[in-house]
Amino acid sequence: MTEGRRRTRCVFVTPQRRRARRPSRDAMDVARALRRRFADADAVDDAEAHARVGGRARAAVLVPLVARARDGGFDVVLTTRAATMRAHAGEIALPGGKRDATDADDVATAAREAREEIGMDDGRDVEIVGRLPVIMSRHYVSVRPVVGVVREGWRAREEEISREEVANVFTAPLEMFLRAECHRFDDWAWPNAARAIRVHYFDYEGKEIWGLTAMILIEVARRVYGREPAFAVATDDGVTVWDVRCRDGKAAVIKSAL
Image (tube, rainbow, N blue to C red):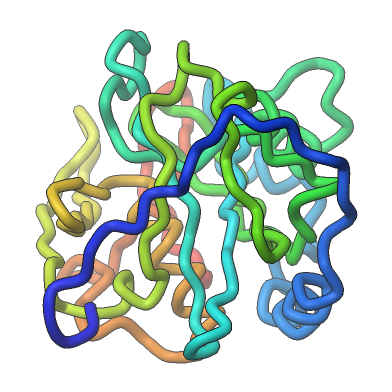
């Protein structure tokens, strides 16, 4: 984090209807500049990417980046999941969820989930930049992160937030996920797995951002800012969650080159 104590910048919510808009020219320009940094993952189609990882189900999440005019940096839009959710209740998350049969691809899954959860529309509010490699969750779900740039002035609207799924919408500075301040980790192994992975935690104004969400944001920040984190992402023997695969219903570490 930057020097001094930063305050969580919660997205202002108001019960006002919104006119449909295309993403601003600024968002399109920023997206165009970032696309090359995610081109390697876009070279692998969704079906093959999920098949490589395995898993019991497919999902996708949207990583919505907000460009900061004041310093050229980025914030990321995050949600606090509702306490009544069956899975990950109360945790910090990116908008997303499991694939529907009607979804054409992972981008469609991420866009649909963001629209349903927080009213963020990919045709109006966000310009898609690209994708990251598929990553496996601790529940054996293969997850595709989809990265987008949010149009200037976007705000979550109360009537468009799914309160069954989302308790809060806020932003956090993307560069935080490259800094050692407020960072800690545990090395953890799936049941019966021979090798552990490193699980990362970031404390941000009373909120704990950890696990798959933290790992995705570390990788997005690394690509966007073009530098390595100030902490070790992998375990001492070089393993990260990007190396985990599901084989015969169990977790297996297969070293990859992310």
